[in-house]
Image (cartoon, rainbow, N blue to C red):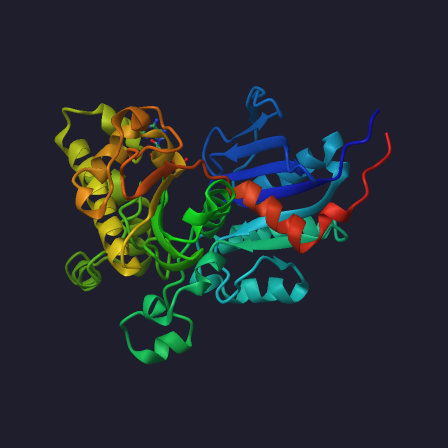
Length: 400
Ligand code: AMP
């Protein structure tokens, strides 16, 4: 059999799902992609997609909890012939505090990640478990942490500072921003396709289940809507986005709500789901045209996204390019139209036909602001980062 080309494995581990892709070093073409879904819920399964994009039938996974899912995934990967070709593993790590670049995982970095768990208790423990599992079974395989916060380390102090007593800033309580792998990928795509635009004033709108916007100037993040945690900013599928801090005391006092219950509500029971009372999925809500709560949830999402665009245009001192991305941003012409409605005063003029087709450029030819749709790919960004950091392109190809 012809030996497989050297590969890099990119892992994007969340609390209820783990996505992975094996890329060929050099071309960074995906060779195998998969996802374990519904971890901790009945009906957890693994769906694998081959390089042609064809999915195999879903395979049930004994994933009563995250560690069972990780153990299953490792065994399954090891049983695949392509696994032997893997030269390195890259992980999406949601929180990296002050780290501004992808970093090779050492015992020291792992200890640091364990120390900063209190800053991101929802994501870091799962990511650490994945890293530890690979380190235990494959100690020689280099692993790299690709931080979602890294892209925003260039934000100026005024965008990082939280208006609470100074002593907390010294303990690392500041605005970090997230979705950095997606933003880094979008900026690389913009630079590749439109190098001059990438040097200008850009707003990136990553609108998926998690949703945020970033203001970018001369290729560097200057502000973003998420903050100390990913719960901040724009209203999301189940997260509140920004909330009046006075609500905390009201709920604690009047409703006797505990901190843990508040955390659960803010992250998992609010946003589009909380407002509509029926669904966190924007497609479902758009279909419920006669349900006033569903309509209100969609209105709120579009209204807030418009406000963030206006606010970031002010932060940037004007705007040259607006990029829509992620599930909603890439696919929903209705939402893009509603967000951009009446933003002519900022120079944003959508072309209805281009918008309806999800075209790469959806603004009119005369629009002062170019509005673009770019498909994001966080796993591809992980693979690129690992390849660059470990200089994997210098690996010699195996002989056939
Ligand atoms: P993501 O987290 O990037 O996978 O995005 C998920 C969100 O994108 C969900 O709210 C979906 O309803 C939404 N979405 C995906 N496709 C469409 C579409 N064609 N129209 C509207 N929303 C969509």
